[in-house]
Length: 52
Image 1 (tube, helix red, strand yellow):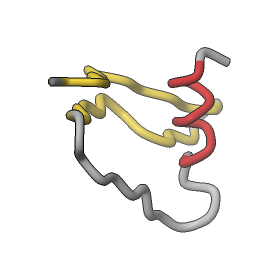
Image 2 (cartoon, rainbow, N blue to C red):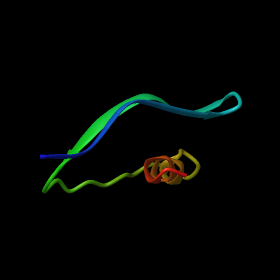
Image 3 (tube, rainbow, N blue to C red):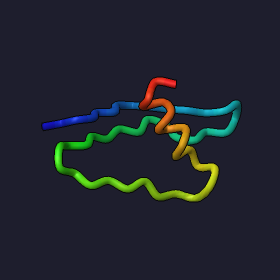
């Protein structure tokens, strides 16, 4: 069962592109970790997914 699907999501601040056209899915029972350096858009991604 697919709990979350994201297709072609992009986010930038002016000329700075945080992510472009990312797509992924999370299924029931999956264990997921989001690891990246500071300022790469991890919190921004979660805010977008939460609807902020």
